[in-house]
Image (cartoon, rainbow, N blue to C red; front, side, top):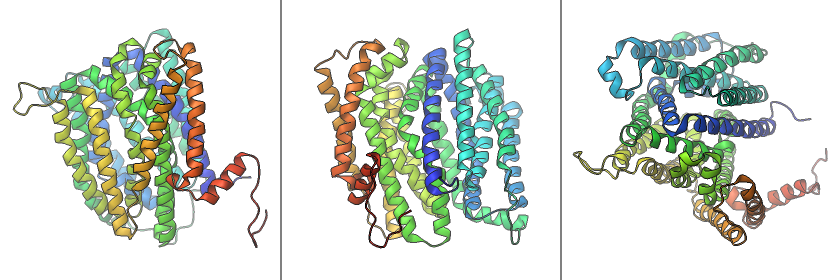
Amino acid sequence: MLHSQSVKTRFLVSVGSNALRGMLGFVSGLLIARGLNPSGYGDLMFLLGSFAAIRSLLDMGVSSAFYTFLSRHTQGSRFYLVYFSWLALQFVITLLFVALIVPDSIFARVWLGHNREIVIIAFLAAFMQQQVWQTVTQIGESRRKTVKVQLLNLAMAMFYLAMVSGLLFVGGMSAGRILFLLIGQYAAATLLAHWLLREGQAAAIEKEASIDQIARQYWVYCKPLVALSLVSFLYDFADKWMLQKFGGAEQQGYFQISNQFSAISLLATTSILSVFWKEIAAAWAERDHARVAMLYRKVSRGLVMLGAITTGLLLPWAEQIVRVFLGQSYAQAWPVLAIMLLYPIHQSMGQIGGTMLLASGHTNRYMVVSMGIMLVSVPLSYLMLAPAEGDLIHGFEMGALGMASKMVLLGIVSVNIQAWVIARYNGWKFDWVFQAVGIPLMIGLGCLVKMLVGLGWDLEVVSKPQLLVPIMVSSFFYAVFILLTVWFLPWLAGLEKEEMKNLFRKLAGGRRNPAPGERVH
């Protein structure tokens, strides 16, 4: 029987639960996109995204410090009091600004014509989703209660899909109703989580730190991240604001739904990120540098290749995906989707690298790398999105396509700079060859398989049943090619040849022969 607190069990539960939750969330997003049309969906995502940016401004790295400190050792009640007070302060400040302080003229320019009531509702939904629920999951993961946390997440995803389906069925879909649904769902889940996760929390603490000591601990960790929070806000908000202003809600909708499709490739990364953070923080605290190096190399290689495999499967079918799942109103979005499917490949590597720096306490290095990339990103976004005529500095007026192109190109550059910094300061060799070989190979195999399938079927049809057979045939041959590639080139995925042999034996139902002196269980 698997132990519920072991790394292997927590990883498997995280991957399985997040895969199911990701699929449920993906379907929910598709239903919302179809129910609201591109403009309505773009408005909804702009409102939620604006508060995600504001959160990064007010958070100042405190949430990262909170989880890192929790992961290192058990904390007392004062530690929680300090962090919960910080969350309450963020809530009050933001609510006062949005509801009362910001003048109407400035409000209209920032939120581009949306009324104050819907913006306040969006803030409440974003706060519950992005701050309150994140805190709940961090507490659960820090206590190695991954199983309970993931089951809660899965139950929420099922409830959300059911409610969204009901709204679409009765014709009651609107941005306001979706926001109210998010508020109610996360409020109820937080209360339930408090009851489920509280057992076992009263662990022995030798000497609880004073509030001043806790505050100083946070300050040392977060001081390098204060400036980064300001730049992160500018980066996050500017992208969404410029796309909404220069491209309009429809282009925002094209980009956001493409981004949701591309997030499929990030399921594995989001599944293990908290587990990886916990294990890196613990290994670093124990000065087990060999374990840190092993975890980083295997996880980063494996996730990049998993992302490349997923992208190679989906990218050649971008036009068919849009036609079948989103309908004619999103027909112009397929080139955006094709480009955005490339984004998660390096995003996986970037998230692992960022987690590596934060969990090990190297916030200065994280700040320098991240700030540099973000400061470059804002003018690039303007260049891609601004009108070709009329302004002092002309842009390319590319809308969602321009935003997607910028995200992919800058993502490739930024994560490799980050990886180089990590390698340099840890005395490792910069690991880049697996990217140059593996990523083009996976995408090339996907395009080759689709081309071969296209010789026998008409792929221009819109009907789902008619596309089902060629897609299944394509997926089968693609899977065969991938298995052969990983068998002959296991290093691409961070595996050794012997590990691959053992894995294939397990898949085939066999067992490896024990090594001399090895105990047989």
